[in-house]
Image 1: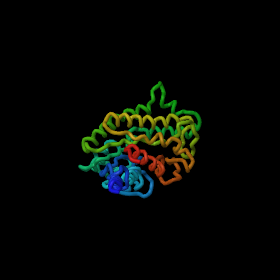
Image 2 (image 1 turned 120 degrees about the horizontal axis):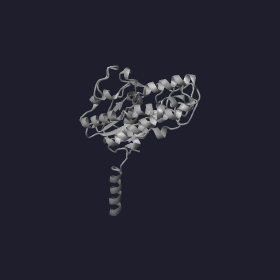
Image 3 (image 1 turned 60 degrees about the horizontal axis):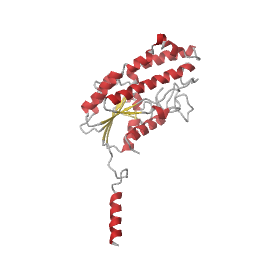
Image 4 (image 1 turned 45 degrees about the vertical axis):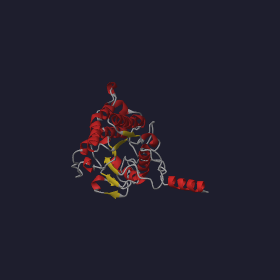
Length: 285
């Protein structure tokens, strides 16, 4: 009987320290989220903080903080933020430098940046204007690849040094923190698709335009690897959930949102997927 009693006591004690149990201590206790409107969950209720930042209480950082049980969470994601606004104030919204959010005990950082510095918005605007008059074919693809040079992809890749400098800035200010670079999801289909009225692009331009998002993600992945950060792929899991899909399948909104979200931004389903990928990247189930 004594042996059984000892065994029961041992099992009971071990049950208190099983990894992943409800009483387990969170792996991260102080989390800072950086980024632009693609990280802030623009247009998704509930709105929190300064309304000029269009930050949602259900953006992927907030969902991740709740999933991880983080005690100290600071979300400074803000619409229109550019790389320069990591270390300098953002005049358009009156926000201080996002790096100001770091604390001595910060041990987790996520950052979602890229499109605002890539100059892709003028490219997308040009392709939209062309698409109005040429709904078929791939005229924008042809125009942006004249003389064998991919002009738009060149804009994206030229952003690499700035992303690297941003990541070095994170390490300098919070050297003990684990840094995660969260990529961009799939917004447009990878095959020729008629997407009107949600996206006014020529049918044949869809593969090229979605390819630019993949190029942006390649730059983010490469710079993460070069600068001591981890890259979180949210694109692969979101393929087939772009803005051209039916309401029950799309995780991003087009020109006429059918779920609460900003135009050409992820909706709540997209934020939930991105949070799930971040949590998985941290090894938390």
